[in-house]
Image (spheres, one colour):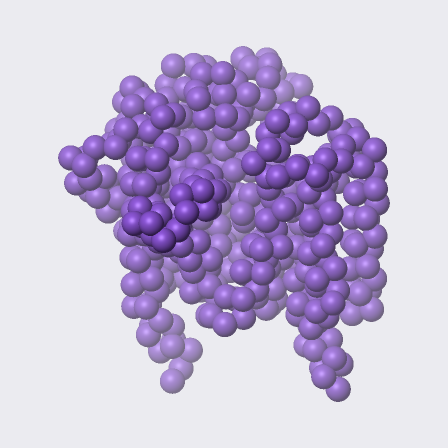
Length: 437
């Protein structure tokens, strides 16, 4: 069987899996609408289900492109965008926000298509230069561990609190770190530690991999972020499925599995076997905060900027220094004053799209974001799929919760791209050979 034949036979299972994921997302969102109606942003109404299904069909058609694309870093990002836009269009029939939803829904669907095309199919003519040796790679991993320890030690002087993740919001707004230290924390969590962990896995250095996971946990009492606390579990899940499944299937299962578990817990809690507290903690963290929140943010941003001035990208600090900005505070804080959903940090779809240029030009912004992020596809060309999934695990998880500019700089996506660029493609084959010889 040729590679082409193998590719063709893989389309039907992928389409089926995407369909299952779509249904799971819709069922999960239905539970969210009923469980979190107290936010007064949406209300559950059975009569609106048919409308939501009709709106979802064009998004599903766009998402089918993923069955015809090969695995890449862009495949990960595209799947997350598909999930967020699907949630948004299914949410709008239940939305209590009074803006005209027609244009924003159409814009969101076109934005998804504009983003998926370059991230799935575009290949830049960039040839990675293999500038570091295997020995240098080992030193780089050790340096990442040492730098992270220094970041933790420095951060302790500013904050150290051992509190449960449900209590972090009582203290997190009070945290004040020097800007350089704050950037270092974000880059370590988003890029450096996942890269080091992925390297250790491919090198079969299991003890070192566990040590890297402990460094994530060490950052939690300093930063008080769920990202640091749950990173080991997230990386462990991705390692498990990416080792056992075809890469594209692993990407889909990485969200489908946690979403489906939340739905199952909701059912079991309703009929008694699972305590309601366990169900609410899991569902609130995964199905609501991780999956539904980016879709809700799109609804909120569309409502807010239907009545307020656009930012024209002035939320980006460099641009804010050059132009007059209608908002003096961070955009998430401005939004939080008008809606009962907390600090709504949102993805590029909401910030560089809706907030910056409005619904009409949002697809152009999504296309530009896709072009920028598609560079990561080629810079990771030739690396093992599992390595790409693991090393970008935190960047992709953060992707739908922060603007693109923050993702690239504060959360270290640009650093990760650079590390991919200089990584020798023969490194892991050599290291695995040495570890087994």
